[in-house]
Image 1 (cartoon, one colour):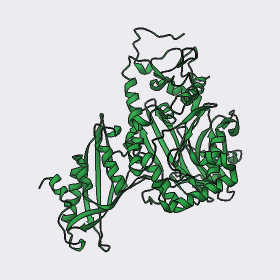
Image 2 (cartoon, chains in turn yellow, orange; image 1 turned 180 degrees about the vertical axis):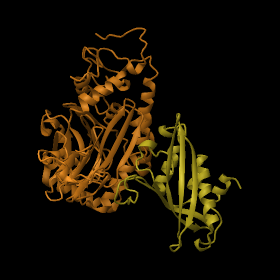
Image 3 (cartoon, helix red, strand yellow; image 1 turned 135 degrees about the horizontal axis):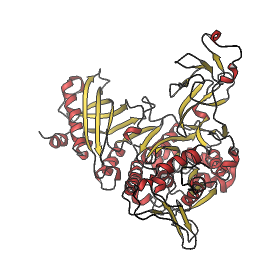
Image 4 (cartoon, one colour; image 1 turned 90 degrees about the vertical axis):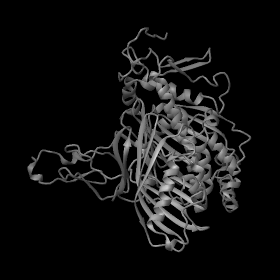
Amino acid sequence: MTAPAQAAAGGPLSRDVSTVRRCDAEDLLYLEAELLDAWDLDNWLRLYTEDARYIVPTTDLPGGDPDRDLVLVDDNHMRMKSRVERLNSRTAHREYPHSSTRHLVTNVRLRAPEGDLLPVSAGFAVFRFRNGRGVYYVGRYDYRLTVSGGRLLIKSKRVELDLRELRPAYDVAIIL
Amino acid sequence: VIVTLLNDQRTPADFFPSRLVDEDAERHRFRVHRSAMTSPRVYAAELANVFARCWLYAGHESEIPEPGDYVRRRVGGRPIFLVRGAKSGQIRVFHNTCTHRGAVVCRKDRGNARTFQCFYHAWTFDTDGRLVGVPDRDGYGGGLDFSALGLAAPSRVENYRGFIFLCYDPGVVDLSTYLGRAKEYLDLVIDGASGSVEIVKGTNDYGMDANWKLLVENSIDGYHAVPVHITYFQYLAALGSDISGGITGSGTDLGNGHAVVEGDAPWGRPIASWEPSFGDDARQAIEQIRAGLVARHGEQRAHRMASTSRNLLIYPNLIINDIMAVTVRTFMPTAPDRTEITAWQLAPRDELPLLRQRRLDNFLTFLGPGGFATPDDLEALESCQAGFTSGGVEWNDISRGMARPPQQNDEAQMRAFWRRWNDQVEPGPAGPGVPR
């Protein structure tokens, strides 16, 4: 199945989080990376539940709580949708034309399920190239996956950067 | 008279006329020579004449609330740290360098300490800067005065209502005089927050390959809002914010290079103007805050605090944008075409969690390197910087609004900055880069 077709159907087939194997989680994470690198953001959003959250804390407070602290990104599903609409438009100037990106996901670890949520962490490196410049983002993804309608989906994604300063990477206008 | 040299072989970065800022009131023309943004000599002159001479924002006292708390950072390009004395409780600022042979003595970005020990030869300083430990003291003669070898403080450090500034020039006027009419606007922010504000934990640090003065202009520029930030206004509209009335207001030269753009706020403000996107839960809390402001400050001043926005420039490199959330932003060039930016969020201390969340939401969607607007500002400024290197056009035009009372989307506030900058940096007979 092609990535868009697979994404249109949602995440990989799954019964419930207790039966999810690492390769199932990896399929979902790799699919997400593929869709982001293809700038297929509409299908990317389909990998998330309707109550999803996407969070990137600041580089100086990696454990930051978006309800209390200043973070870099704190999107609920509505803001994720706005972010996608923005990045799909020609008026998100920082990303028009789009950067060329490569999301690498590795060291995938499944933790013990918490009710109907499956915590999954992974190491990542994202490379971003645009306007003669290349920058990178490195860190850890902390996901909460869940099964909905027979599909494995993302309930939350938290991106803790290993970078101690964001300055060398300029900004986070792309989705990490 | 503007002297331009034909057939000049130098690169655009080194090329400048006898004046960098050219104001012609009669022709309603105000121009800035683009070498002001590209020339290494202008940059050198700025380090010597601006950043070594002006009061610079160093931090806020709420960042180091407890005895022994410290934060380290660069101010004016120099490594310093702020510490609250473990015994004295006094806020001190020190050059981050050992008085012995130079190594930095504060090696973490923040923390709590009773002493700072240099790891090189283990000289140890207390939080008030005194030298309290020197290994093998017997190796020194009795004539050496160790009490004179405490940590060095910047020439001047002063605190305005919690905002700590420093200056590397001992001859500078006192901070209150320097801030002048800008104090009125700082007061509006602080008093609007019931007098007690704090920096929210978490720092937005980011960078751009563009001259720092472009960010000064951009931070107080109403003219760019619609073309650059259309995606943000679309987001606001999707949320149900009614901004169809547009933004009205004016720009003001506050003297000393300080300037402000102030206008009606057609959006909600956690202090203290409700809008539907805040949710019904927040409505009563915000109305109570507003009633409190009216009781303490009267209807007129309360209205100004609650229902108007302001973008304040404190010359040369501090921006306080009191729009929905309150941003404290400072920035410093590391080269003519590179700027390091640091932004914090200021909020009322002990704010209701519900309102704090709305404030954080407000801040993040527009502001910061992951927001819906700031990245596009960076793109615009880097695009200008790239355009300058093309050559062919020598001057930027900053004339907007010279023939009418300055509107919110005019450029009077930028001209205020540029006039003061020109006083400090303008090339004398020997050219820029020669400290006067």
